[in-house]
Length: 89
Image (tube, rainbow, N blue to C red; front, side, top):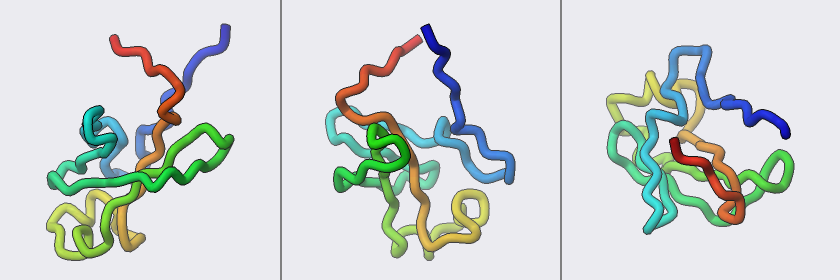
């Protein structure tokens, strides 16, 4: 049995993935500023990780941008593919 490592913590002071809320019904994330991050089915890294993106238009005008995505146009969040079951504790 292998351990599941949580690599969501940020060392640069920006928001971690844990600070984003996942909506199972809509299959979207919401950032701390309550803006939606959507997925277009893009698989990254090992082919089993989905990429969710915020709108750069939402991020550009957001007061939380310095704490979220200071060096990029919009925030990205990586999540397991839908076919992978996530343990809830």
